[in-house]
Each structure stands twice: as structure tokens, then as C-alpha cells.
Length: 402
Image (spheres, rainbow, N blue to C red):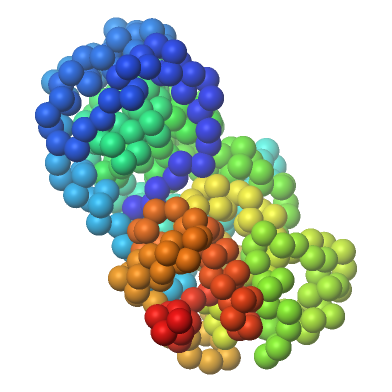
């Protein structure tokens, strides 16, 4: 499952901070102290406006050591884009996704009219998150999030999520039997975290409840509403496969850098399926595996909405690519040459080397995040290498020798 923590919870965060400063600063890495944390959090939640129904969800909650093990064992996002998409963008999912476009045409038309988000975009998230609702997870939400809220690694984030979960139950959107999902607390067809669920979900089927587990209209429209909140621009593109020349200013291939398509055309970038429009429409050049691998023009709907839905570049690229396949695009090219990508342990070694060189890569976690890619780009420039921000085995070997 995919983690989504893109929205800052200012109001709820202030409620937690003002109501329980002492407990918010307390955490633990075992069951010891957990019961006291729940007792104090109950007071914080009451001060934040949670009523008796919501507070009752904390009754009997126990620490879940298995959740902590899962939190420490996430290495799936260390895969290369081609490896990850090969697992996730299957022929079966594309076929099912296209069938769902037709089956729920009226729903997609209504959602696109209101939010400007096409059906294939939402269906792709649906496929990756829960295999079209086939498996939404069977972990009890409250105990899972409470355990992560007590754990020291990301306690503040999960305390906001725990408050959001209690609020969902308190206001009657979900019954406790529906408060089940992935191990980190995601709920429903498109796996909303409780806080985002509470803040953004919509009642699209008009039954008076926002149920993202049992209502496909609620789940899909809520996904569209969340994308809009993240910055989705109605009826605009998100990702387009392109071909790149053997030589160009590689340092411009960065999702943080935009140029009009006319500039990309001048540099020799071509559409994979024909001629690229040489207009003023802004786009970034996304090279998920560097200059020799697949290439895409990433539009603002990708660089904003997709990367706030899930900050993992490999996940977001795969979700956006799957949406293009469901919409009718051809399979992605593997690129011009073999790319020797790093594995999980190699990425951790790379990150540690970069830290030793004075770069801030965040946590040494084996995940190729924005900070790691930015550091790689800077080192590539200093070394005189093509600055495509993607570290290969050869790049790591060069750093090991230096």
C-alpha cells in the first residue's frame, strides 16, 4: 500500500498542540507507556471537540508491534520505474480499467463535469491502491494509527491522523466495522488517510454519509476532490511519453524546472506517438531512470497533484502512466540503452556517501526521494557527468572510488 501525507492539518494540529503539549512530546518504541498515551490522547481529543461516540473508539485499544515491523520494512519504492510498473501496470489491470471506463460512464461524466478529473486518472489510482476494491485491507484503523502515533518515528503525523479517525467515527461517516484498511490507516477504495478523509471526502451518492469503503461514487468523487485540493487543473494533461535525443542539456530534465513545449522541441524532444506541439504550454522533462531510460513530459497536474497524492516518484509516475494506458496510450519504451539501477541497499549506501559529503538527503532509507535526486544532480555537475539526477551502479562505483 501507498502512504499519503500531503496535506498539512493546521487546525487539528493546533488543537493537539494546545490541548496536550506534554503528551505530544512523548513517544515510545515499545508497548511500555502506550496505555498512558491513550489516556492522555483521550483528553486531547475531547478538548479538540471529539464527542463520546468518537472517544469510545479508543476503548480497549492495544499496541500493535506488527504494525511497527511493517513500517520499518518498506523497500518497494526502491525499485526502478520499469521494474515497478511491470508489476503494477498489468494487461489485466489495463483491460479492467478500460471496461470500468465504459461501465461507469455516467459517473465519470458527472465527476469530470464537477471536478475536471478524467475517469482514467481515478481508475488508475483505484487499481494501484486496492486492485479496484478487491483488497482494501483488513487492519483495524484505530489500533494501527494509535500505534504509529505512539511510535517515535512519525508520531506527530499520526496523532493528526488518529484525531481525524476519531472524528470520522464521531460524526457517523463510518461505523467501526468499516474502519478497516491498510496497516498505516488508509481507508476505502482509493485509500484515504483519516485526516484527509475527514477534510476532503464528499457524499457523491447523496445518502447522507461519506463512505469510501462501500460507495464507489463517494470514493471516486472524493479522489477527484483531493486532486483538486492538491492543485489539479481541470481538463489539463498530466503525463505524455516522449523521445529524447542522445545529447541535450540534461540538467534541465528536472520536475522542478519547466519550459514551454517549444523549448523542448528545440532541444530535440519528440512525442512518442507523433509530433510534439511547439507551443507555450509549460512542462517538465521527467526521466525516471535517467537519460537512457523512459522519458515523459510531466505537466503541472503531475508535478503538483500526483506528487502530493503520493510523494514517491516511482509510484506517482506509475499511477500517471497507468492512467495514460487506460486512456489508450501505447506501452512505454524502455529507452535507448540498458540502465543499471541501484537496489535498496545500494541506494542506502549512496545516501550515506552523500551525507558524508555534506548533503541533506533526509532519512537514509533506501528511497530515491527529491532530496537524494537533487544531491545526485549536484554531484553529477561537479563530476562533469550528464546531470540527469539519476544514480546508476556506475555512478555509485565512481563515488566509492573518490
